[in-house]
Length: 191
Image (cartoon, rainbow, N blue to C red):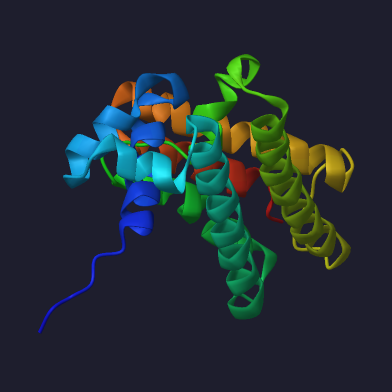
């Protein structure tokens, strides 16, 4: 049986890994070509510029992440379980060779991006903030969560927290560090 190779998917998958490991400015089309055994021209056929590739990777990443958040909503009945599942999504990238969330990694290089890539990053973080806000608002209304600031303020804090927890865990090389930070955060908001 012959299995048809999906070069477009391989390019995007490899681009995702390279950005998560090295950042936007840390890889080239030559790196992708070497990794999957194709010519650079094959990459340019699908993505004329690096910006085109990274925008496509970001868009796919955001959509997949939001789909996972919707699955959490559909499966997890309590706010605490939803938060735990949210933190697990960010933990998954750390488990896989201590990579970072794609958007977390790219946020550090924001000033070097064109507007279109900045917009994709902003959409990711806004969508995450809205989802977390809704979970926190519902949890506070039901008495499951307690925090002194608004749900929106708490959601923004949580997004900043998870980004920082990933960075610190990656820096220390200890995923347990991430776990202890997350456990402490959850304990601080759950009644």
